[in-house]
Image 1 (tube, rainbow, N blue to C red):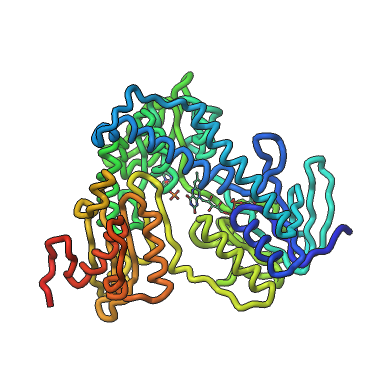
Image 2: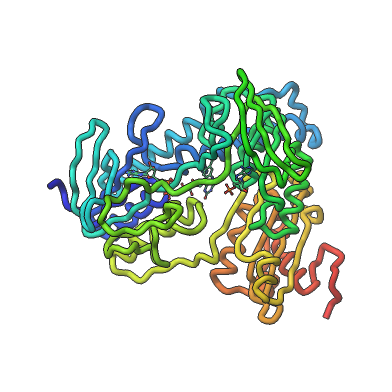
Length: 479
Ligand code: FAD
Ligand code: AMP
């Protein structure tokens, strides 16, 4: 038997590495097991988020957005940029450098905090035992008083479009294209599909997004979703709703995709196809039979509100358990679990987790939509403010979008904030804090905002809840 730990974390994504660092900070002897092999053939920490998720996608979104600005928008500001072109290989190399620096940074953080990084594949073989198999197949069993499973998720594959090297790819493959495909198909108009579709559309691909559902971004307030759809369409994304992909055929260097919509069977040909139909928990084999950790029918590890599994001392967090598949949700669960293990009281507010789509403009939301609230029988009042009326948005050349606040009609308590606009992902933190603090719309209305900022739109939306927005002709009468 090898070393004994207070805590062993399996998986070093944003759930696992944060749990491990927090546990070590709280004085617990902690190890974190990771098996991800990076581009240089060595184990790297950071999981999906750092290697093939949040960070590399944002590196490409930022680069492609700057390219569009330089090519199309700079001239409006008087900047003559000449012939603007994109060196895709350089863009990719920059992304790889960012990934390398960040994943290396986690190794540094482990060292600084006293977390033991263990390279290999971890498996819970008993309530207090983790077996780790290294790259050479050598197995070592470690003892731990507490185990945290943070095994994450992988892309869902669907039978109609089996992945085909370089032609039909998942999100990971779409972060590696070395040239801009002429005709690009994207299956799924979810967060990842829209972000990756945007990257390649900005660089010149003709992008068609095929989405099985009839509604667009149903989790976002319908006014914001509608405006987002309009803006993305204007940018050139052809989003086909009610289009369910049923088959595909690879013909040479092309992919013929079959889908059905309200007009019946359809066909489209692409140079590359990205399958973005969601992610599934990556839990197969992470717990030995007989340990007693329960999985649901979709493979998620069954946990309670505080991420306890059915076995005392074994916890599970992040994408491999219920809830939104988001890095910050995983990290917060990691902190909660480490605190609980250290004997502190801890809980999470699952009603105040922000979501962001990093398109341009960004879409960000927290809490209920107007439609959610009404479906729950809650009477609401709402306030919206368009960025077209914001001085800062005009100065920024970013007047598209709006901010909307949904408040309880009786108590004025903020129930949700939904925004489409430049920097919406930064602005939404105000909505998260408002929900955490149980703020009323009036609380935000009475708060002094710096001028000129994009956030003033949130202030004005709060004022608009009572029909008192200053820089807008109000719908409602003054009281
Ligand atoms: P993961 O990050 O998946 O990490 C799990 C780790 O566990 C992996 O490193 C894996 O190798 C390891 N592991 C699994 N099994 C074992 C085992 N048996 N032994 C050892 N190690 C094991 N989320 C956001 O919040 N914002 C975004 O902007 C965003 N963008 C995204 C863009 C893309 C293209 C993708 C694919 C995802 C994006 N996400 C985003 C989602 C985000 O990446 C995940 O929600 C997040 O990484 C989940 O963290 P996790 O720690 O639960 O799992
Ligand atoms: P998300 O889970 O947010 O990443 O979004 C994935 C999207 O893919 C969902 O909106 C699904 O409706 C969509 N989807 C799943 N299967 C298909 C399919 N066969 N054809 C088209 N869209 C699909």
